[in-house]
Length: 126
Image 1 (cartoon, rainbow, N blue to C red):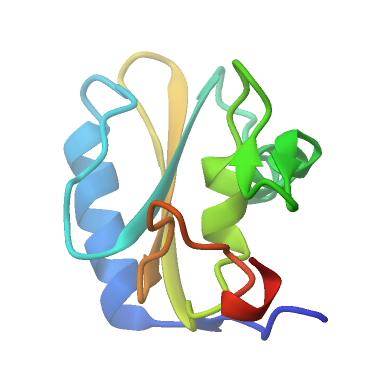
Image 2 (cartoon, rainbow, N blue to C red; image 1 turned 180 degrees about the vertical axis):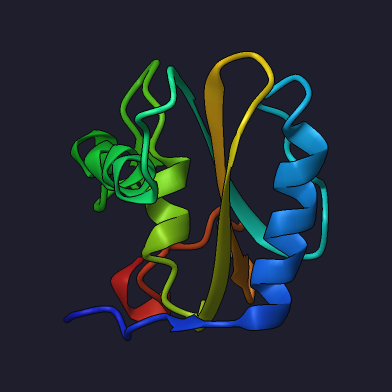
C-alpha cells in the first residue's frame, strides 16, 4: 500500500523557516521541540539542496525492519519513518546557509509521527 501524498502547508513552512533562521548562526543539529514532527539535516559546504536532505532521510529505509517495527542495531531510521508516517498529511520545510559555511535543512510534519511502538504504516501493518 502506498502512503498518501503530503500537502505543503504555509503555516508549517513558516514555522520551519523561523527555526532554520534560528540555527543560521551555528547550524547545529538541534531539534526545535515544537508541536510538529521534525527532520533536520546538516551538510558542509553550500551545495546541499532539499532533495539531498530528503534523499538522506529516505535512504534510512534500508535500516528499518518492518516486521520488528524497529531500526537495525546501531542504525538510524527515524527520519525515514517520519517521512512515511501514514497519519501525517501536511508538511513545511526550510533551508538556510549558515554562517559556518554549511547548510541547515528542516522539515516539519503534521500530525507528527514516530510514536514509540507504533508502525509508521498504520495499525494494520504492526
